[in-house]
Amino acid sequence: FQERLASFTPASWFAKPSAISPLVCARHGWRNSAADTLHCHSCGAELSFGFSGFLSYEDMEGAAERFAKHLLVGHTPRCPWYENPCDETFLRFPATPPETLRADMARRLGALAARLEA
Image 1 (spheres, rainbow, N blue to C red):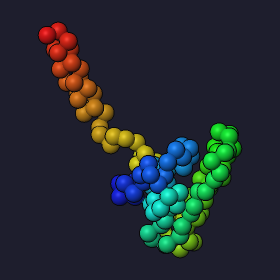
Image 2 (image 1 turned 180 degrees about the vertical axis):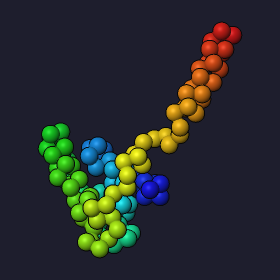
Image 3 (image 1 turned 180 degrees about the horizontal axis):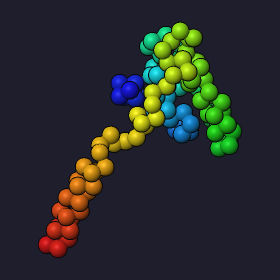
Image 4 (image 1 turned 60 degrees about the horizontal axis):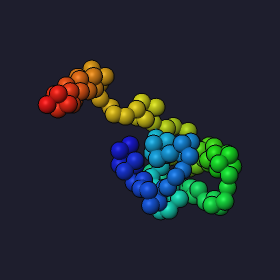
């Protein structure tokens, strides 16, 4: 998942709606291979999200929702990613236990308070 996610850059997958965010695309097995283009390393399938720069916000969201359906079935039928995305827990960041997050935040807050009092 992390390797697929790392393939997305602002230069090649810029300002996409949340329905086709890098997290969502990587969860469905896609890598960003070129500007506005996704590639599956397992089956070789490619998807392209080309659009006119003159779409309204609503039209862009609609186009993204339609494109998002292809993330699931755009792979070849024998591909392990076909209709089989990663579990949604992969979308939760950071992947750190809540207790650790709370302890780290308390430590940082204490350090900040000490600096403000000085």
